[in-house]
Length: 216
Image 1: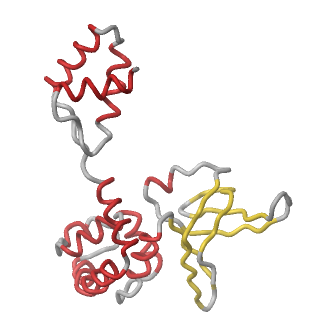
Image 2: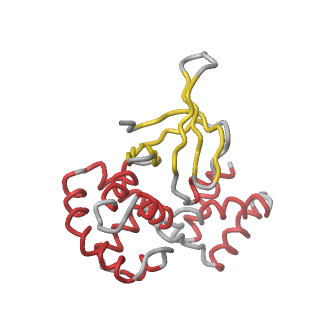
Image 3: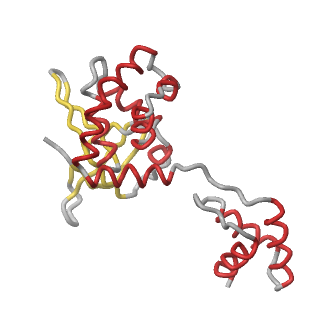
């Protein structure tokens, strides 16, 4: 059974990636076709980059299919989804493509089926079945696997809605920095970087101090 692959991306199309695995400097190698989620971090892959994927090897009568994930938590959640009656690898991958592990876990724990209903292919009965059948198994997995719990927590923090800088704080800080000789364009670019953080500066003074660190 294949559980992990590290190799060069040869091509990526329609949710499938061809990964080349070689040995040292040898021109010889082997290529594996891997099914990937269609979330943003997978659709923006560049040909030639090195990928490390945690693999789920699905064996059926007429095929041997590989499903790859960047994180162990995605693979674990994917495999847990397969335990739900009526969910096969394709539907499980579709769910992973639309929801991060953290968001999926949160929807199950909060019993929020509306989040699941936004996923193509998921109806009311399937959404209720996912919540009913996975609540206890996922809870046990998180309790017993500290790595999984930490990874889900980290993903949840990364997915927290971004905080924007209040306009008055933005204007005051920009004016102060321009008086110090910095150009408006470079100031605005630094402020945009702060807005990609989950915690924006709390005051004009802090905003100015953080900006000075980036501008100096």
